[in-house]
Length: 291
Image (cartoon, rainbow, N blue to C red; front, top):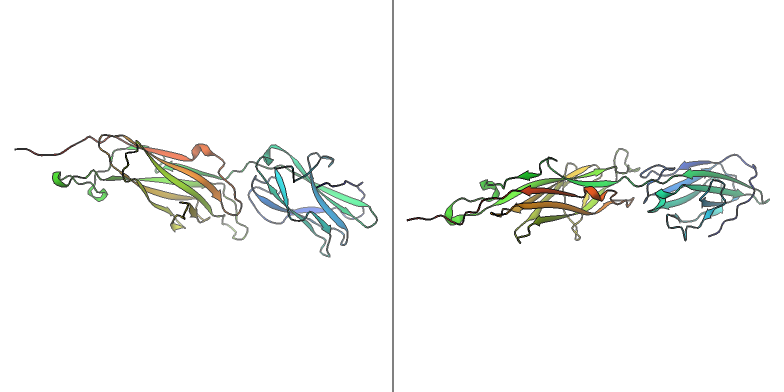
């Protein structure tokens, strides 16, 4: 789409740009992946208006959102100002937008052909939304196998069972987006946990529960995705690892598909998406007998 820039003439009062909705970041520093409404007020009713984005401060480098992948206009960007004196453009800031500075312009043109403009400098930011996995407590990275009867360990020779070890991992959310429809709350978030054990001996290793203080015990959907209430900044993932005498077992909780609801923000730091706990070797005992 192409926009013509007219000579600026002060024929009505200077416009004000104000945010119409909250999202992660701010109006002038939006996070990649978020959508913002940009509204001008005090415009003379009946005049024509058009929004456009330029790459430079004088507005000459007009960007076409059909070919510029870093942002998209959602809905109309031009029209006639109604009696309320408002004009609004909705912009989605996409991946890569944080590498540039943009200038959002509004141009209003009267029937005389005279026009007036206003601009807003926008510096998109790399999203801060992040989900991280860690041990509970965080420094609990190594342990002996559990040998309590409550964990299935049976010492009797004719009934011997090595039992299982329960471990807890924390999945913590950082930089959640405030939900404008529920002051003090944030949008919900979700993730897909994968439990990996090395070496993989084909034993019965499972995620038992995923639980949040406000969300309660969660149930995965068909894609094994858990959705967490926005009031929770963390959930505890409890796993059961079948003991394997004779082996060290490296148990890893790996996160994938991290996403925040409504904003569709994805994870910003893949370096903290996994946590590993080592269950140390348990001596082998093959049986007991005698004469």
